Image (cartoon, rainbow, N blue to C red):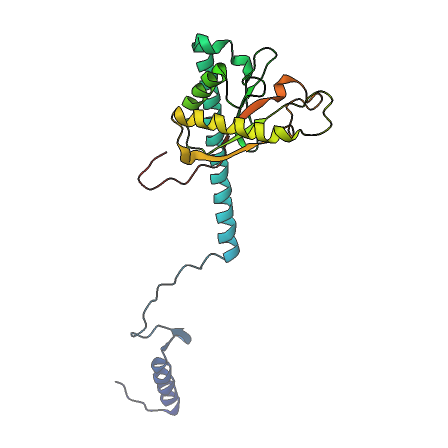
Length: 238
């Protein structure tokens, strides 16, 4: 406490009191603001990421996962194809039939085709049941199919007859019946029935040799391991 003896000292004293009450202290004529004792420091939340950036990051992550899935699938298909080729080489009774097998990858999946050759058919003429050599091949294919979890489509194809202007009515029934007969052999060899997605006959609608639909090679069974894997029950593993 000090005595105020002049008007100037009184004015200075009042200014100091007012500034102090408002959180301002004058130091050598310079006003300095300080935080009141009751002020609390509040933690600030980080700014939320804009919705567009979140969506873009999610899309990128999904694209990476999809690409990784495709790579794994392609590797699994390549391994299955190699296993089947190796089986054909290792078994004397199948080695001579290797020319009757065509393996490739299509947008639909891994396709394994049992194709007729001149003098070496998979079905006897007009017959719906596969012959003995076709049964051997189907059993070998079943072992490879069982290495993968993919669902399966089976298609039957016939060749056109010489001078045939369109699809013979009986070709639809014959190709479908051959596809279904092949399905039964696969299941007998251990392929789970739940994995069969489609069995159909295509008659002469998709020739393997479009330039000559009458060639024996157009008569075939196509077995396709589809690209998407089935949804398995929780208690099963792939």
